[in-house]
Amino acid sequence: MMHGRRGPGFWLLAGFFGLFVLFLYGPTITILVLSFQGPTGGLTFPMQGVSVHWFGNLFEKQMVGDFSGSFERSMALGVAAMLVTVIASFSAGLAFRTRFRGSALIFYLAIASLIVPSVLVSLGIGLLFRVLGWDPAWYTSAFGAHLTWTLPFGLLIMFAVFNRFDRRYEEAIAECKRAIAVDPTFGNPYNDIGCYLIELGRDDDAIPWLKRAMDAPRYEAPQFPHVNLARIYEKQGQVLDAVAEYGRALDKMPGYAPAVEGLRRLQGRVN
Amino acid sequence: MKRVSAWVTYLQVAPLALVFLLFLVVPILTIVVVSFFDYNTTQIIPDFLIQNYEELLLSPVTWRTYLQTIEFAIITWVLTLLIGFTVAYFLAFHVRSATWQTVLFLVCTIPFWTSNVIRMISWIPFLGRNGLANTTLLQLGLIREPLEFLLFSDFAVVLAYVHLYTLFMVVPIFNSMMRIDRSLLEAARDAGATGWQTLRHVIVPLCKPGIAIGSIFIVTIVMGDFVTVRMMSGGQSASVSLMMVNAMSLLQYPAAAANAVVLLLLVLFTVAAMMRMVDIRKEL
Image (tube, rainbow over all chains, first blue to last red):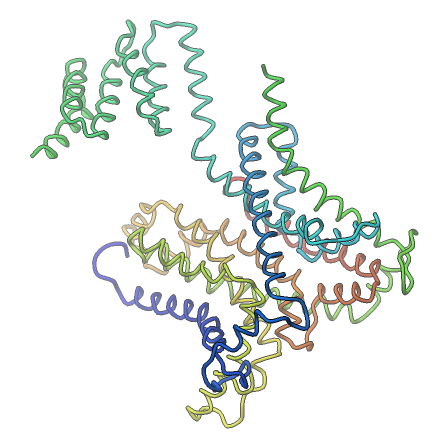
């Protein structure tokens, strides 16, 4: 399925996908074509000539509302909802990195906000304004109603973003620092901190920790920090430094397989 | 030190919590309270009556409308699930390069940048009596008379739902599929499973969370919809929300509120049943 020639299954599914895309776009394309309908035409084929009559019509004064007014309102509402959504969900995303009292409640409120039909939210907000004797307006009640639909999505996306910076690595690093405080001569926790920082993508911050691991007087597996450092150098393209570190790892532990592999890989790259 | 950081956390989450409180919790509580109020032709009168619920639940119209809404939800769910799963399966397992995956995924997403109403209207020149579908079929000689059921019918409503909402099924299922360890599929093939068996015994069970999330979206959206039903059925079909909107336009707010409470309970029970299949927090 994943390798080799594409079988009939692929073409069948590709055809299905093509039909789906046609289904998604087809009607919109007909509308696009019909918008250039002549002045006597309507929402049906065949076309009664080709013109931009209806676009001109859009900008003239009309019986119900005017285009530019409603357009400006939509834009203002959209931009305001975007700003509030981004700021509120980013800040909430920061808060959700730690467990706090009520975090589950707020999470379930966000989910509820997604699943409660929007017509109910609108009815409720309308009723609330009516009971309080306030006038509903697009920048108050309608704005709030929009936020109940956009904020949950914002929050879920922020969860996905912040999961990249997994809290557990930060917690693990804190544990290692506690271990160092107990016994600074022991090498393992220095190396572990380096590993977690590598996982977090902070290679440059990892290097000093790995070097401290090498200097630690007590360490049963002294080849580890050398291999880790070599991998950073390898990633950064400093081939010679990487070779030197793999070599030091082999000095500490002759025949250590990851170091041998690393050297072979580098040899391949140099050749 | 600890106390300060707790304060910062609460401050960070406050804007979000405040919006949910003001525009979700309080409004829903208002609905529940008002559903017990009395009303006449001009105003609502604070009271504690169960008359609104009695009138609602004893009316055969209510039951017919609820059944119709549930029927729309089930048909739409089945169709979007089949289409959405197939599309997601193609994107996840048959499109090999990540670039193409992104491009094709975007192609599916772009129509969702447009408003629902515009996407609904765009079906009218297609499905009408003299629309593209009928003219084409007539010219091909497949039919003698224009098909009347294409527009302003239950068919049109379901078609619009599928058109509007299939993406809500594609995205979570695609997401689940991308998390499946590819070596599991290799293992299934090495163990002698046919493509079909791999699909049924490996992929579908591992996609369950995505399927559940997509289903929750589809069911809650369809059960709360009135715009699509009103536009695409031409006033011939009803939905629970349409019934509520009609009551609101007659200023019968307490009646609409009672209906809203019943609908909310129905939606929450349905979702609770589907949530049993999946732990949403794990999926994030």
